[in-house]
Amino acid sequence: MGTHAALSDDRLVTEIDSAAAGIRAELERLTDDSVGQPSELPGWTRGHVLAHIQGICTAMARQVEYARRGEKVELYEGGYEARNRAIEDGAVATADQHRDRVGAALDRALGQLAAIEPGDWDRPITYRNGVVRDGGYALWRELVIHHSDLGTGCTQQEWSEDFCRHVLGFLEPRVPAANTFVLRSDRGGQIRLGSGGDEVLVDGRLQDLAAWLAGRPTGHGAVRAERGGEAVPLPEIGPWPSAGVPAA
Image 1: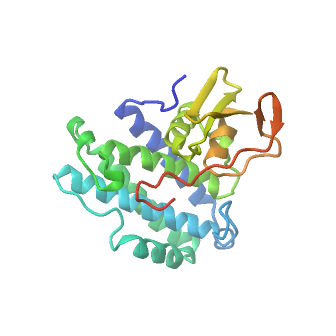
Image 2: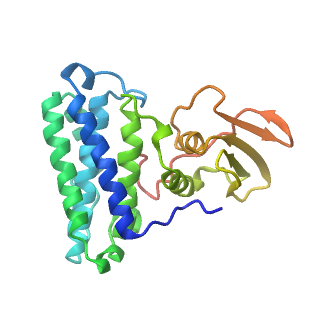
């Protein structure tokens, strides 16, 4: 069974639009008090998550904008130090400020994607030394995963099968070199990740398997591991596949 869920470019844009709509719905419900509450990410409030969403939307919009005119630009204007400062500074914004800022960043990113011509998808970008299509998939991941990170009720259980399979394929580099993870989900069949000799069977709902490999919380016992038919602790996983890019 495949893991990368190769979507058509039009379908990818539709999925990104849907994910953006989910973020906008959250923005409408937020209050000044709720944006300061802890998120699902250790050490980050919901305000931090929203500031990060604003930043990644702006960054990906720039990647596409420059690529469409045959140029490349660094992911974050001013680099990662500027990115980190912007998150810390933006985290303390009011709910109305987040609505305006994140909304504008979403508009910019979606506007750039809507303007893409078929031949633009393969134009090179700086992000992961990839192409515009890679940036589109990254934006999809960021919007869906960070929606859940807000901790406002949306969880990985709302992640689609296509999204989960994409995330599992993208995160295969997190499997330690010595391991092969054999994922057995409620959707039937198996997904093999990695190529090491130490084979571990990992069982759970597809959404929980994707969340676990993404380093996100799952319910107690939602993901279980076996080795040689015996129950074992969940295996360690490696860092987010950075390719020179810090983990989001």
